Length: 400
Image 1 (spheres, helix red, strand yellow):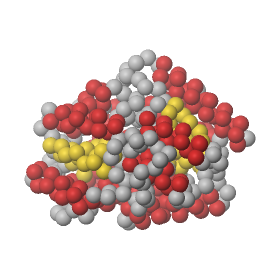
Image 2 (cartoon, helix red, strand yellow):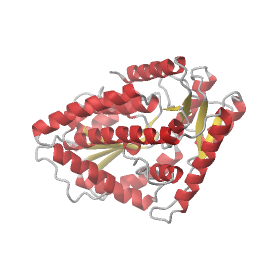
Image 3 (spheres, helix red, strand yellow):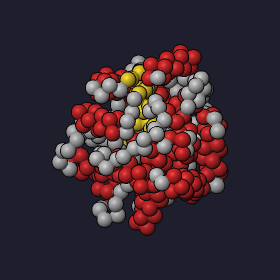
């Protein structure tokens, strides 16, 4: 299915939920406690940039607003945004997102704007960041109860933890299977499943993931790869790759795609239009809407719910607000070296300072391993598509 087709399908599913009376809370930053909204009886839905939305200059936004922020704002200003029960903005992640939430509440005062503020920490600090975020989640929970008269229900929370854990387990397996054998399932299909679930986290979207996992598991069993896939999944979660053993007949080149608020489905669509390109070249992505969300650890039921959700959110791998730069670069180097990666495509959301500040460090880390890199400035509309495709094609030729 095309990128546009996936978007149309997920939006149609969201409209059906709204029509049936479901109350939807939209969120923009991908690392939020989904279990919290479900515990209050809401359906959380990840709001993302859309292709075909004009997102040029807008006088209400600061000059530092990135193309992603402008696209989201334009959706609302142009009447392309669905009517949601509320919209959650992040605090303390980047200036653009902070500004968008502030402007949104002023310009669209009929919308219910919520905020969750994140800590900025160094890796391996004490638990002060966890306590801070747990308190912020608790305050958000109290606001949800007060605004909507929907209390936090323990039984809903327990069911949500199990449900979201199924999503993580299933999609982690699919990502890990592609590390061992990228041909076992297309990258487009994996990220389509992730996008669909995060847009409409329902029993139907979960059922599709489970069916796909079962199909891939059967293929892996036939090929004798199941143990290797499980080892990779555990290695990515723990950061310990000592037990990983890759097959001898790996397809080459092996490429990783890195970046921040970039849509994996758009990247897959872009790559598939490049002559002589195969999705089997893509081993995995390190994108916020893909890998980083999938490999976030789910809350445990043994902790206080708010502490558990805070620990879960802070476990998102590679997020700039959660881990120190040296730790993130070392974690990426471990992954590149132990998964036999030859090429790294660094996607930069146009005018996104966090992406562009970090890209030189990513390039340097990859260079130390003799992994070739290319930086691609992108916007959600892929407005410079021809140039981007040419650059990727040339990059592939250098790898060959």
